[in-house]
Image (cartoon, rainbow, N blue to C red; front, side):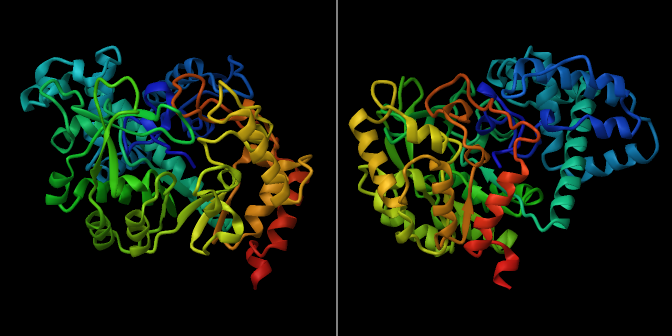
Length: 465
């Protein structure tokens, strides 16, 4: 799954307003009706697009109904006692997040760095006054997080009863306009105004000719190290309460990361800075035990990055779409070169769908020329032994037959959808994260076909018994 935090700028889950909180938009309203906190009639009245998420309409619609449910919450009784218990177990992050959300609403959703100095710098008298004046709004956000956690736990329990594990995602960096940074300013490179002194990104790569200017503030790793990486330990621990395994986004950044001047228009110019290396993983292992982490090691994978990954026995990632191009690393993505300790994808949220990738024409609007696209397509067809008619199933079959310990197929590829179903275009700000999976789209025919391939290549538990 993509990160499930409350989305921020551009509706991106990689720009969440908290590393610990859940996204209120994911809260189902039906359970609130079942609990008597919401009238069934409140669920109607709006028809939303089936294939795209209209964030501008969905977010206020759901918030209005969540506020109705909160207003109906009894002052005493079982629901209130469960909420109090949740607040107590979440005291490490919930008070700051709820206050952050209340203050953002009071300031018209402006970024925290634009608040008055006493609130921006978190001076105690100002915070105590805000907590008193915004007590009702703070309580609402606490209720939202309680309801998210309650429903998520029910989801995970149901999945476990079916033998299904959940794999989550932790972005290495966090959004500047987040409770994480506001509440822990000393851990980030910020100037006197609370703005990032330098920002994160990656140099030019497969996804963008000018690199990717993410804009996230960068960590003060020495300060984090002094605390035993306490904030990171808490972050990973909280994520493991929701997921059975975690994809660690931009693993390369733990060895070295690309530092860019704050006012740079692109990510082309920057410098590599050494990251925390093995020390952070030693701290995580000491605090949390075994690390069910997957290292997203796509990009410039130096020997040092590989050594760090292998030192902690973390599986890396292989991406089949990267296997047929001109990049010198392309052979590493061919299935016959995979190690067992890896996770293979047909494509990720940053890639086009398999059908879209295969049918791309190349040229000015692409990172590949027309010649490159044609050469890549020919190489893929030859390797797959395919005529391209069902390129998505050919690619699915290839990742399943590989020796990789885990194979992941985006649902868009199971459905054979084209570029219209792409989730994200790195380096762009609009139209991302909106693709919506329609209920019933995965029919019995697709299920049977996937099941057959899964059994054939020994990825069904019963097939290996």
